Length: 367
Image (cartoon, rainbow, N blue to C red; front, side, top):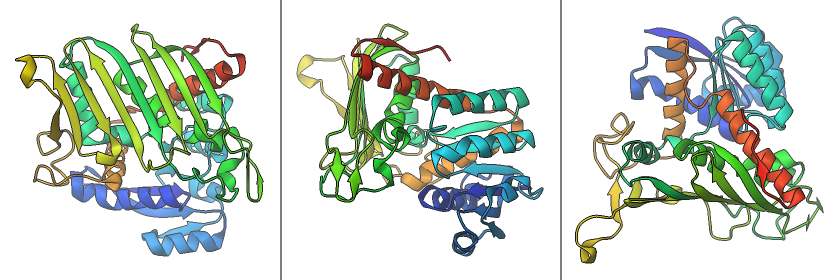
C-alpha cells in the first residue's frame, strides 16, 4: 500500500465532496494508492484554514500556486471556478502532476483546447469530473447498449433540469453573469456528456438558447436560463437535449430515454438507483417497462453495500470518480473521461451557442 499526497484547489461544495471521497475511497475500494489529504487552497488563507480543519488536510494556503508547487502534493483536484482551471492545470502538468478537473473543463473553448494540448504533450494523467454518468445504474445502461439489449438505437432524449432560479424574484448572484456560469455552461455539459457516453459523437446541432428572466433583484442577467438542442449523431441516430435552471419542481432532473429496435431504456437521477427497461418480446399483452433496482450485480455497487435495492448516493459517485483517478495514476494511463472527452462536450456546447445565434444546423468541429 502506497500513500499519495492530494491537493485540492477550492474548498466549497465540490471541494468538500472531493475531500470526503479521497478520505473514503481506500476503505471502499481497497485501492493500491491511499490518498493523504496534504493541502487545500482557497481564495484566502483564512478560508483555507477553515477547510483544512473541517476536512482534515495537513495544511492550507490562500494561493493555489503554493499548493501546485509543493513536493508533498503529488496529485491535484481542481474544484475552483471555471476561469481558474487553465492556469492551475498547466502549472500542474509542467511539474508532471496528475490532474482531476471538475466540469466543465474551462470557461472557454480556447482554454479547453489549451488544457488538452498541455495534458497530451506532457503525457500526464488527466481526468474530468463528470460524476452522474458513474452511477451503477448508468454504468449498467452502458453495458446494455454495448450488448445490443434494445437492438439498434434509433433515438435519444437527455435532460438536466433544476429549479434553483425558477423564481424570478430570486436575487441576482454570480450564476447570472457570464456564459460559463449560465445554463449552457453549468448544466448542459452533463446531458451532453451523457449523450456522448451512451450514443457516441454528435455531428451537428440545432439549438435555441433563452434567457427567460432577464433581470433579477440586484442586477441584469447576462447568460441563459434554458436551452434545447436537436442533435444528429455521427451514427445516424437523432436526439434531443434540454437543460434548464428554471424547471419548476425539478431538483436533479438528470434524465434520459433511449429507444431501440428491440426495446427502450429510461433513467432519472432523482431515482438514481433504478432503470426502466422495456424489451419488445413475449406476448403483446404482457409487455411493459420493468423497473430494475440496482444491487451487487451492477457495476461499482457492491463495494458500498451488499444489499440490493439499498442504493447509492451522490457522494458515492464522487468516490467512484476518485477510484478511477487513483487507478489512472497507478497505471500511468488516463481513463475516461479525459480532458479530451471534456473538450468534446465543450465543442458541442459551443456549436449549440453558434446555432442559437445563426438559427441553423451547425456542425460540431471534430475533436
